[in-house]
Image (cartoon, rainbow, N blue to C red; front, side, top):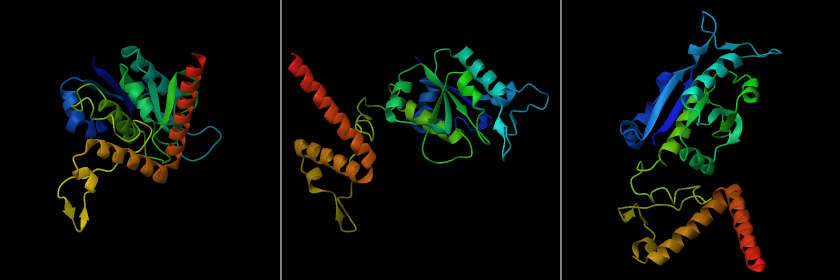
Length: 246
């Protein structure tokens, strides 16, 4: 089944952009996923194709009109009724690898890209639109964030990355940062590849990688480490209860 990506944007010329090259580009040409970049302005209701207006209550900037947004979303849902609608906004819930896996396992995704001061809030009450953030940053628009979201999904589609195990040890896949990597030359500017990685002892290599993954997560991303430890404790407690129940 082809993964259908629909992007609602004021700048459809930005797509596929980087998604048209490398693994994602090849998968697009092979039909593993499909892209439809839809111009939001096509759903404007006046002769000037107006998509925004001044903020209610005053203030700087412009706000995307809810009637125009709703018409664009309805158009996309009519073409892809089974696809979730995701709006890229810094006010949204942080995007996680878990959510990416869920989206990649489905029929596709409809991505709504904001501009100016953002969306009229009523679009989230009037339509089932999930607000998603790619980080605590503010971009000029949702298009760059949409490219990130789609790239994260596309690389997980069957056959895109080649070997099925290619993405299993990536950062965030198991709640931890990935261990560091090395390759030739063995020595560079006095720095050598860790001896254990040259030992050929796969058990020791696996142990080193696990330890480095945990150490790096603990030092670099204590928030991830706390969640990982919490999940591990919860899992162990659940297993213990199951044994006791038996």
